[in-house]
Amino acid sequence: MLACQSTRPRSLSQVAPSQPSNHQGTFGKQAAIRWKFMKQNGGAILVIAITLLLLKSVIQEQSLLNKKLHVLENHLQEISEAANDLINNAVYKSQLNERLSQMQYYWKVGPRCTTLDPQLS
Image (cartoon, rainbow, N blue to C red; front, side, top):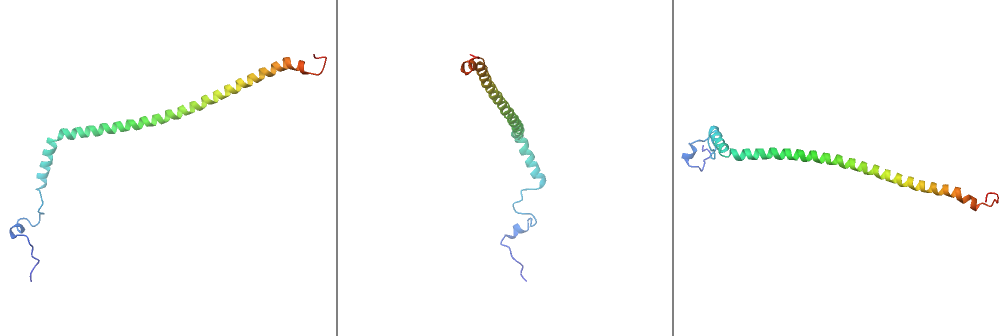
């Protein structure tokens, strides 16, 4: 009985049948290669890490400033509404005072001139 035959040359089949053909080495070799890469590029990695930390703190501060700005805008709106109410009250009071003074003047001067009773004239 014939088994399934491979098209690979026999010399390659006997080298390492349990390892994939694209294997780049053992774990230790890969770790050493990565360590060497990190040592050579450690400055760049450190700069990237510091930049990311600074960016994170800037984003947090921006968020905090946005919250404070929102609170200040709310306070400004409340103050504006209170100022408008005070202005409206002041205008109303000044109009009322003007009308009262006109009425006082009218009652001091006016009724004597406009009445039909000859004794009051």
